[in-house]
Length: 120
Image 1 (cartoon, one colour):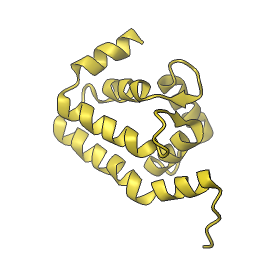
Image 2 (image 1 turned 90 degrees about the horizontal axis):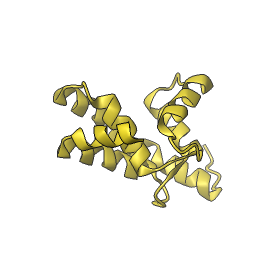
Image 3 (image 1 turned 180 degrees about the horizontal axis):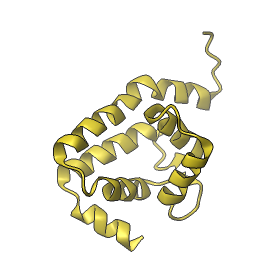
Image 4 (image 1 turned 180 degrees about the vertical axis):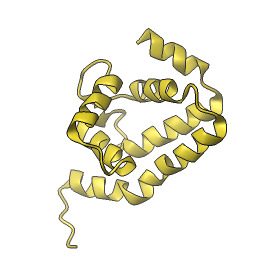
């Protein structure tokens, strides 16, 4: 965990704010952590070909306390490390897709959480 802390401290303010913004969009209920199901939905939004094995590896890397939930510091630490060697322009381009998550996937997650059946 100390390594993640160091990575986060090295982040520029703009990158940190962008990562925190995306986390808030994934934290559908606004409760301060993201459950496994929500992380999987986010992962599939980002990569429709994400298989179970890749998702499990992602969770292993991100879920440092092994709670099955991703807290904001875990999310920030993971993306700080991931983006460390990425140039600003490439980082902003990648995060443009992350930011789209709220518009296209968040309502679906909220409906599933509330048990709402949507006729299609």
